[in-house]
Image 1 (cartoon, rainbow, N blue to C red):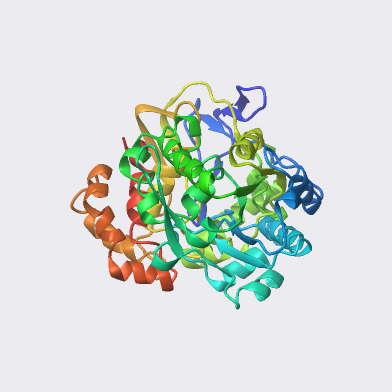
Image 2 (cartoon, rainbow, N blue to C red; image 1 turned 90 degrees about the vertical axis):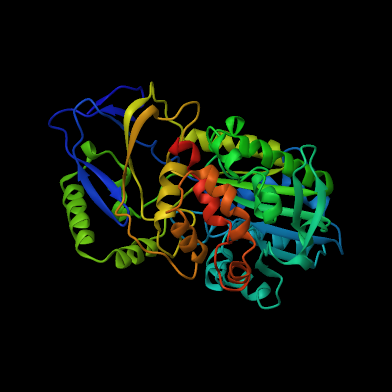
Amino acid sequence: MKAIDAEGLVKIYEKGDPPLFLMNGEGFRFVRVPPGSRVLYPRPPIPGLKDLRAEIEKALDNPIGMPPLKALLKPGMKVTIAFDDVSLSLPKMRPPDCRQVALEVLLERLAEAGVDDVHLVVAVCLHRHMHDWEVRETVGKKIFNAYWHKRSLYNYDAEDPSDNIVLGKTEAGDIVEMHKRSATSDLLIYVNLNLVALNGGHKSVGVGLVTYRCVRSNHNHDAQYHSRSFNDPPRSRMHHIINRVGRYIEKHVKVFHIEMTVNTDTFPAYLGYMQTQETTWSALDKISARITQASLSCTPLALNRKIFFANRAPYGVTSVQAGECEAVHEQTLRNLYRQQLITVEGQSDILIVPIPYVMPYSVHSVMNPILVYAMGLGYMFNFYMNKPLVKPGGSIIFLHPLEFKFDPVHHPSYIELFDKLQETRDPAEVDRRWSDELAHNPRYIELYRYHNAYHGFHPVSMWNWGAHGMN
């Protein structure tokens, strides 16, 4: 393959080149593409920080736009620490999770300052509540054992009328309704693990800790359709609305943000060749890839998922920043883009997109047809800044086995929406007809609150997620 950029990340596929090794859901495919096709490769992983704990402490002592954390603490104050849920990271991070390290440092600082009224809350919004064992994996056994059983470590419940509060409305009329404990704390600390530009910033609190009435304004069809793209916040209507909500919250609540970025070191060492270009493979890499592909093609998809979920990514944390929301997030995005952005000249007529075995809402579950759609036309189509990779009127080919299977525990409302899609698949019409109906369904509210199910509105939001890509 011939490189057409200075970094060797954009290449032209030529006759005689080896086949591409592409993910295909819970397996892989060897694919030859027409000569002249462009092949895009990610930038190699940036080295991670050598001492994460020291970097977290440094960020707490030298925050951006706020006093040091120590100066904000005093004995007897009420503090809530919120953190991202199981949708991050993908794949799951090799222990200890960077959120665990940050929480350990924070809890030590709070104890030293005489702060003992502390709650830790998983900011799930309308995502499923994490299982206890998932929380334990994320925060570590020590924190879990100290806080879970006395109910000061828990999942946020967006449907608990006694633990949510309306702060008011933004200048545009958005209802701001959020977790009462967080809103009434003397200090709210948010710990964010940032994988993509979509996340972090005001989205942490302004989505993670709010109710359906609040999140509806930025997850409806209009907001999703006019976001160009989710990973280009200045061009994202969704982010404009989220920022309004977040700024309103921070007029009423003192929030100290911690954001951490990671590199792209996704696979364990024995699968390291998956992160390199096929033309650089050794003979052993080629044999390993063939064996892996052949083995996974002979085993059931459910078993393949278990194999993939058992692997932990050796991510390296590349930056830690703390302090005021927007100042912190600006620096986070710079560090994120340093790892992730590559330059592509011109759009394509046809885009081939391999879809992996997992997306944010299929962790420890199956990627049902709606989630495959959302991953393809929502997430992966929107991995761009400025312009999409495929031109208007072009075609996208997704590689995925598309198993017709739904998880009845995690995704019960998805089953109903999928049946309703036989009536219409137009995202605007789906949103208009069924958002409130599914969101207010008592059965789905019960399953969301007590049985680890995604909220009734969630599948509609996922259908909205692909509206721009579908167009």
